[in-house]
Length: 490
Ligand SMILES: Nc1ncnc2c1ncn2[C@@H]1O[C@H](COP(=O)(O)OP(=O)(O)OP(=O)(O)O)[C@@H](O)[C@H]1O
Image (tube, rainbow, N blue to C red):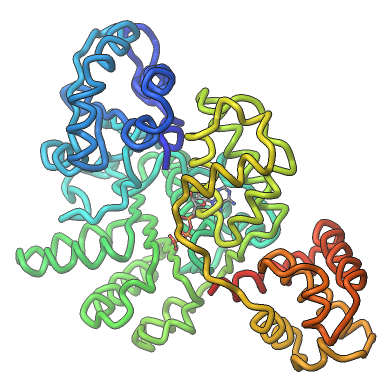
């Protein structure tokens, strides 16, 4: 994630009216010009600023190495630039995240839907397991926001096919609407917005009912906190902290698969809350019924309310997310103008996985070529990403694999795709397979034709063009292609 991803929301007013994240955004912009894209994207972009309870501001880096680099090469300049904009004229020091969090351990509680502490511009997702859930003695207004990310709200969630139902349910829960199912279980593959929705629910629910106790935590943190509570003989406090929640959200429940005592604890937490009419929202990478490593008793409770799928994004949704993301980066001054549609389409083709993968590629593009975004050609983008993403060689996909996977997907035999048969139920999957061969192997049209029962290259060309057109016009074909690409990439 670049600095951009973390500089979207400022809560702390300064003497001159600018918030720390606004100031940092301006400082970062200048540093980028001065240091160049390489050092900027390695050290400044992954860092952010945080203000502690005493009002001191630190540049917080993800690693000690980045901290040392910033201290040696950039801190003086950061302080000059900062002093020019911060009405309080504070001096900043650099600290790595572990160091900063050890010195400023309190998680940011919510008050009236906004973080009370002046934490801004966190340098990494704040989902790191913490030793305790949150203070359990800080009164009824103590909503627990440890682990929530500022930018994951309904405002930043892009609706589209695959997430519309989930979004509607999420809004309903966040609105404390009566008559919904309980618990709600959001399920779906990695990186398509489950955590985003859970965060958005927590922020919105807290905003609407500032006095309610909203607790969000990952299952990993649930486990870590529970284990620590057992070690410290503090299980009663742990239980109370969760069972007094008005709304409990637990992310990535599949994580506790195979962990018997944690499951047992979650089971009791869940039943206590449900019996008391409290609301519970969970997420997992599969529907509860498919969580085979979870005890049947817990599984049946997880499945007892509403299971709500968050499906992989189709091309249209990815395009909308990409546009929104670049707009946000432009708002922070990290990119100029808009990318051409061809460039966006290329980015989406190059990131056939989750939205997270697409976001990562866009961040990289912004860091290396943000200023030139609107004039970039597809070839330039390809060169830039090849040089910077360093994902290593992609797994080579063969024509044979494409044929087998496509045939299986459509319930056909590989031989059907190679045959002369022209019925639509075979001709269309054949064209899809040809399209995949053209886009995901280095084979030429004549070569592909040869591998499809000795067809002429013009037949292949026609098939590929046909699917290229249908992908934008026919949602089912687009979905099929997306699903096949995912299968082929493993
Ligand atoms: N519809 C969407 N609109 C905007 N951003 C999205 C959308 N879906 C996903 N994202 C973004 O994609 C990234 C990954 O999403 P998220 O972390 O919510 O996925 P997840 O399904 O919870 O995955 P995991 O199980 O790995 O945590 C986040 O940065 C999120 O903001």
